[in-house]
Image (cartoon, rainbow, N blue to C red; front, side):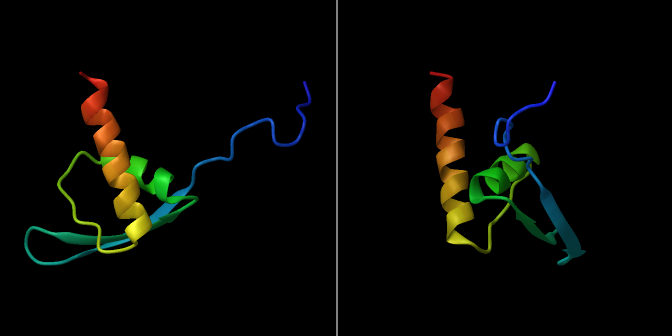
Length: 73
């Protein structure tokens, strides 16, 4: 059945590369549709990480992590 334009959410696209940064670390460079999508992707990795840039991604990570922590109360 045909659907009107805009009736489906925009697909989430995350693309990245990684390179070693010492014996126990890696630098991962990713890009995507939005800071919120990138934050969701990063949280899904379930590993400790440091966001080097952008502030928008850091802020989105804080919002998503806070929502996860407070949702279980």
